[in-house]
Length: 231
Length: 231
DNA sequence: ACCTGAACACCGTTCAAGT
DNA sequence: ACCTGAACACCGTTCAAGT
Image (cartoon, rainbow over all chains, first blue to last red; front, top):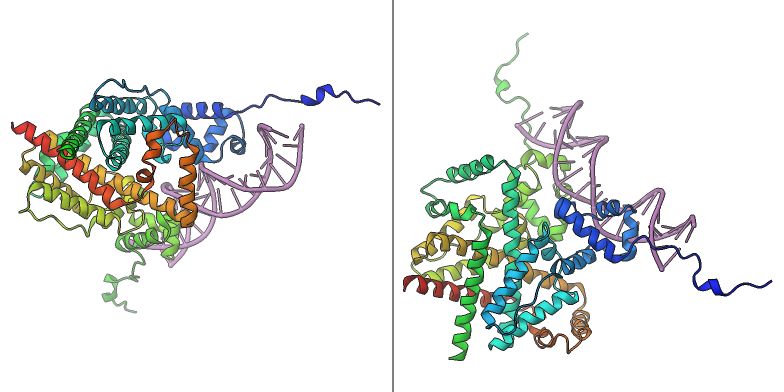
């Protein structure tokens, strides 16, 4: 009675129905369809035709999934041209970051809820940002703080930009403009004169302009900090 | 058989067990005890010795409660001395804002999850900030964008500052420092030289210094923007 | 190794019913 | 007017059991 030893290495090997890459891709699709709040482990499992518990074989927990998602969202970010002056390099990185955050619905929320950069792509991008600042002449401390600040600013900026968009989409266009109107009129004019004077800008959702304003402000701040240090 | 008519005006009037002020106060206490994630309608009801559904008589929903909470958290903010130069006024406001956000656990998370300012106190504070910027000579657009930027920066800054604190508190002090050490060592030195060189600053939780850096940067940016506009 | 079934311990919110 | 009981429609996560 002999047992054939050769098939032992492939003993009833069924193709695994799932792997981490599929899960992450499905999660991105689900995000685009239903947004951050609809992105649940159970909905994701349903989309994959699988039990929710199955996901936990390929992913530690939801937090882990969000980190993988953040990495995937940032993957298409292009790196800046290293021959440019440091201001232009940082500007390019900021614009690229914002661009990829606007590709997928609620991407900024994913980045905000996932912790700091852990995947190789995001680590590389922060490495580039920090190197740019160091090469520009900033001290280690200033470079570190400035890098974190820029990163946080961009995420938070897009977060708010898209939150406004949601507020707009909730009512019909006439209704939402009426709501803004009512909001302004509900303020007593003599109590909040500046607020009322600037209401158009405060409720205006021109994200491009607002984002550029912030980036310019930070660049100006960094330039004068550098000038001060060098004098 | 006569019925006394005089008690009719007070017909079995039981003292209401709850009002909005009590709910908000209990929510603040609960926040300090269990943090943002533990602040649920059900836990809050339990703390008040009442059914969860009862809360919905005094508060529209959880979002509404968070707005009330945000207002309560900001209530102790003092207003800046109007005779100071605009830079000092803004600095004072920033420091005050951060101060009150550090009084209660996860207060920054409450502010971040509650929408824009709706209560009278926060409206008044943004009014003051915007007025300061207008008085300083900024255009309406610049003042609006700068005001929103400062507001967002402060909330996000404290948000991250306290998130770091949580990461520190999770392990014993030796463990967490070891984790940081391991995190750094897990990076290939030749792949991420800047990241490794700045690791101490990136993982250092000196919130005071980091916050001041950001405020200084924004002030510098605003000053050069103003100088440019005036030239 | 990989997936299922079923449970555990929760959420926010609604609503008829009580007082 | 104000509160309760009970339900509805969900969550993330675990774990013994199956294949």
